[in-house]
Amino acid sequence: MSDHDLELVKLKKVYPGGTLAVEAFDLKVKKGEFISFVGPSGCGKTTTLRMIAGLESITSGNLLIRGKDFTTVRAEDRPTATIFQNYAIFPHMTVAENIAFGLQVRGKEPAEVKRRVDAIIETLQIGDIRDARESALSGGQKQRVSLARGLVTEPDILLLDEPLGALDANLRKSIQEELKILQRDLGITFIFVTHAQSEALSMGDRVVVMNSGRVEQISEPFELYTRPKSPFVARFIGRNKIIEGKLGGLSDGRATVETAFGPLAGIPSFDAGHVASGGAVFVVAPSEYVEILPAGQAAAEPGYDTISGTVSTIEPVGQVVYVTVELPGMAPIRIEAYRDKIEGAGLAPGASVDLRWKAERATVVAA
Image (cartoon, rainbow, N blue to C red):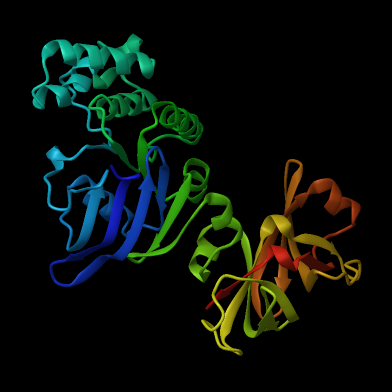
């Protein structure tokens, strides 16, 4: 038996007329792994999920589930279940009847149907609504019923397409936590599609970032956030500070970049030889590692880089303030800092400031 629940091998989707929906890519998913797909609308993440589910044909490549090729197998014959944003609950059925429906169409015996339905209702703690109909359910309850209907079939892989998109912010966060605990307890592989960066990072063991039909990066959340491999990922994930420049050189695992602020350094995301000396690159510094100081107070220290600018606005939000800094030759950047630190430093709009960070925290990506 394969060590992986899911393998995508050069999976590709081209629609009639030649529109490329998903450029060929590879992905191996271990049993019990939680994989998040994230990207802007139209990037190909839902199309990929639909190919896994069998709801969309595969143009080329192969799809394996537990080592068996399911590339051309019908959706109803795949060991997967799909949860949609719109819940897809039958309004004329009770909650228990909705959950049982998938088992009944698969020809399961009534006793087996009852056993499984009772078990998943207990697992998701929705016994108090088992006889209710859709019109009586809240958004959170509908989502739990949709989950129950998918899980009751005991799939090898649960596919979730923007399942939290219709929920308000507080309920969304609560369901996120429940989903993660449920997945861990059941040990089922989850493939989770979302357009929300924070959701993808907090939920996934690994995150697949897509853009315009192609995979930009597949990484664990912390690596994705702190070590983006492309300008798109750097801009789309997190609150990174991005500075344009030209590659000066590579030495001892460090890249030197010539910028309008002078030479800056960082860890290259590309292999030696991929970018020629003088080639266009970006220095990416995660916001959390950028320190803001009054001009002249950022003493030169080995291993630190500093750029200078002027405070444009200061926006207080409780104990935190957001400081917008104008920089010569590039778009303003926004820094988050503690209110007492900014007030203690006497910073105000119009003040000259230095922004500094450890060079080892920065990443250099090819343009």
